[in-house]
Length: 386
Image (cartoon, rainbow, N blue to C red; front, side, top):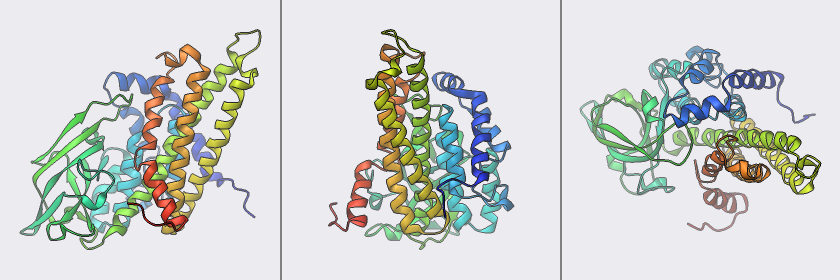
């Protein structure tokens, strides 16, 4: 009989990560972000303690755990006010894809750096003219001798300035039309012809977003990860973990906001009693607690299905988890701002910055509308709408 609790090891993992991140805290995170600096010390300490590559096989420097473990790390960091976006990208997407489809030599070359934080890898799929429709990807690779020449544009690519390499999703030149047969290439960020410019964001985050320009970038044959005819399976190996991590990112931020709002509601007294004694304050926070716990449970279900190898069921659960988590996070931050009154808009209490950070969860890594399309079509069997 299952009691819907996580294994002891993961509970302990959460405790240790929370302790480590607590040494840094929200103040460290926002100070770095506002100064345009990176949270490198925290990143490397997570790596040194073995938490960064916890989902990667042990023979490459990882912890040999599953996606549920790396999602727990991501959530606990965010719950301490230190949401690290590159956790979603480097170990969860790139690490998973390379561990699953890379050659032995590719795994030896790239996975240890992903695990210890010294060889962070970004991920580039979105394009200016394709957006949600990945079938419209125009980044193309053509054969050149025994190597490849890559051309294309990418947008909304996180942390390129912190990464040694980028896992780029393209297509081969002879597959320009019809259904997408994605090809995955590892491109060094210092490769000639690879350029990137930052996109100005309202979000308070140490990770920057970039537009990427790929002009005649020459790559060796072994830059290709997996099979050029491997199709969508190779890409989806990274996208389900991305949704699960996105959900954990949101639930962690949601827990952080709820904790701050609850603490404030216990202390702040206006009419003789703490404001938390009024149902207008207490009930919305209680509702958020329920919503966050439901989203966390669905995230754990998605991770368990993914780790068990049930891709289709994991896809449905991961989409629902990501949807529920983003909704819960947006709602709780709005309620937390309201609980703080005027202070909710101040930098001192840091609630307003979370409005943008959590709102992005409804858009990325996949919009809520596309999740609703997926559920209407695949879960309910309704006709396709797009």
